[in-house]
Image 1 (cartoon, rainbow, N blue to C red):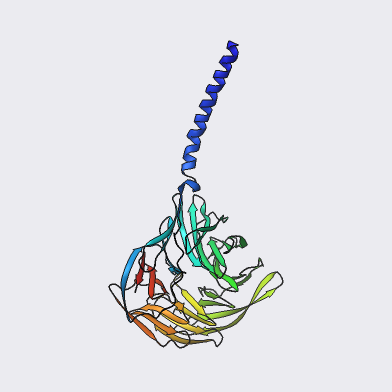
Image 2 (tube, helix red, strand yellow; image 1 turned 180 degrees about the horizontal axis):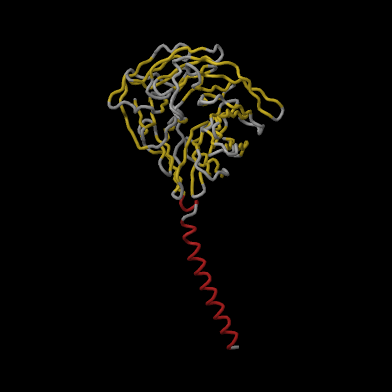
Length: 387
């Protein structure tokens, strides 16, 4: 009997030691896990999107907060600010934070706003691979998933789809569910950030000394159409709607070339449809091209001005000075310029609304959008509201 008691005591002591050792190992893991380091604060209410309203003739700076985002700052009734490890939804009238999502163990690689969602891509030690879809109104998490990338990556979106691009790989994700639509890899190449539209996802693959235009079906997992581009033309994708538009610098003047899409079995096909060559199509520095579309009109911002191109008629409609990329609001192009903000009809470009800014104009290259009677801008590390 004494022997048995001793064995029980020894086993009990060993169990305590092992459990203590496991606790000592497990505790730091738990403290640094996604669950332990993720902070979600959901909005207490569900405000409606402010109705469209005419802009006043003069606006002033209402509020400003730090933000790393460089894209459109508005989705639904929410202004969206970002930081090194977080995204937050703000009241556009006051700048008051309504909801927030923070990952204490990860860094934010990029964000985009689309279809009532705020999409945020985070990186830990293995690249930008954690993608989260948040409700733009409340900040509630709709879905979260991992994309199989081990490099830095950028995030872009189009109707119904988000695209993560890293090194030579693109991953297309369904916005409603967060599920994969398709994955494309160009071995040995580096891909530009993808441009997603209603009909296609397009990018330029830099493969050694050769640049290739890659056009993928926006939803189906078909083989993409790939076409080598003229040497030295420096192609950049401007739009990917029913027709893909590519800006290049080859020749005497920059050219905007259209590619008409068609589907052929399990492949995506495209045909070069024609080019618009015009000196007003100033070729921008790599990565600074921005554009919006309205019907068959593409409005490009080239760093100094915006140029409206009718892709159907193959001609430039108008050009105007602009200090930042445009937004299309209620059929008009809204842009920041030297005087403040200006709204122009897409087809004519004739100013119909001019808004003077007092108390600090937006920084150059700031993205903007209108919500109700406010204009919000994102750029130079700040999110700002004017009204």
